[in-house]
Structures are given as C-alpha cells and as structure tokens.
Image 1 (tube, rainbow, N blue to C red):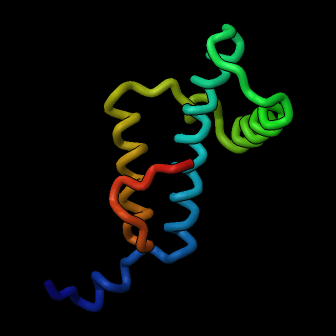
Image 2: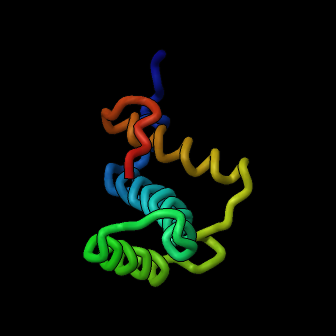
Length: 102
C-alpha cells in the first residue's frame, strides 16, 4: 500500500503517540487498581503494606491528572475501546498485539 505525501505528513508524532499510550496505560492501571482496592478493603486479598502504600500514591497521582469522569467506571464497550487503543498504539511502536501489561 502506498501513501501520498499528505497522508504521511498527517501521521501523529512520536510524542503524541507516547502521550496517548501514557493516558490509556494510566486508565487501565487505575481501573485494575480500583478492583484490587475493593478486594483489599473487603478482606478478599492482601497486599504487602509498603507496596500498597506506593500503589495508593500512584492512584492519587492519576486522580490528580484526570477529571473523575475520565476514570470510569466504564461500560464494556468503553473498556474494550481503552484496551484496544492501548494495544494498537503499543503495536505501532513495536510491541506485540494484545500487550496490555501495566
């Protein structure tokens, strides 16, 4: 497939791609953290206290970075889109498909 000069010039910059990856990484991590927080608070799971302290600080940084309405909860479609975008952006930069580690 060949692209015109105009199409090639409209490509997002690496900085834009990196910023989008960071945003979707944050949202996936935060959502997973919320599930873990529920489990910890309800005695379902335990976490090393030092690690838990660091995780809570990381969650607070994300809460300060994004408006609450951007942090979920998400319906199944929204959650799929967020994960799909993270996977696709990582793929563009050389990761394998479906790489969703946070």
